[in-house]
Length: 371
Image 1: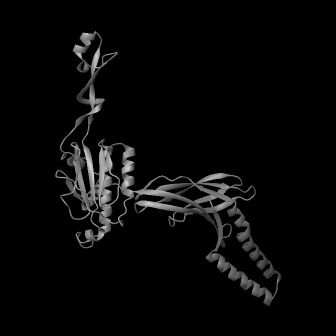
Image 2: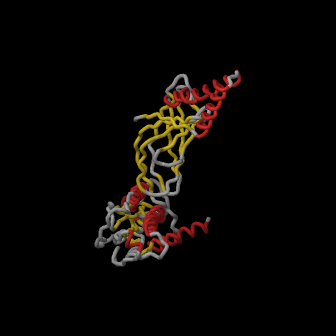
Image 3: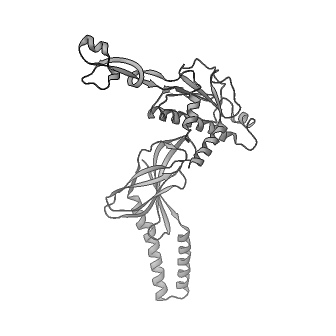
């Protein structure tokens, strides 16, 4: 972790120095005790602001805590551990920011000699993808605001900004899933469904409906029927990004940004996956046109995080490849193919439901009306 100290004179400090020079000229022209005291006081303030407060900044140690993934449009709180290594000088009015995150900054009011404290910085990401953090900057103009002291620590880290997610209404999602080739089925685990799973011994009676009468009579021991857990239909998401941005621009209406339409397609894919997994469905993902690992059907929060990370890392500036030939799909999967521009019915299979990225606006309007 390398550290570098630099000074940056503030506008107020430059004006103050000009005023001191005017006083010096007045002392030279017509000396007086009052002017000499004023010049001495002003020079002392400059010395204290530049040298004494610089020792305050040199003694600071700032360490960035490992950041988590962010999401477009939602604030990410970055945390920093600040330690004052000096046993004499306290530190006051220190701002902390990232060199790669623009004007977002956190503030440290004071930290005593030998003390530690935590500083938080809020950042609102606007674009998905990987953000490379290169350095942490601590800056202070204490005590008079004449000279800004800046200390930079080189600390590299990567933050993955996940795509924006909008809520897909449950009726609309169920309408897409109902177009799949199969409905609910029994899973290979015990649960609270209706299908038969097995018979087990029971120490006590829970319900007459679940009693296995023949097994209980043959073994002279109470046995009950176990039901299988229902397995909900799976959702197979196919994202068609095989056309370059220039080709998409020729097929969207005038005034529509083609790159934003591609981002809307990614957002729609992330929204369908998030809403389906929250309702207990398993989701798989396949991307045509860009390098992306195919995600097999699974459920749960961890699978959703891995899926969103794959969507976040899509590079729309990379060369596009032709769409892959659709392979045999899961018999229990409803396939939804998302297109940023022109809909190509050959992608996703014969039973696929095709969605345009322009339909994302309808989800946004429904959220605004509900709010």
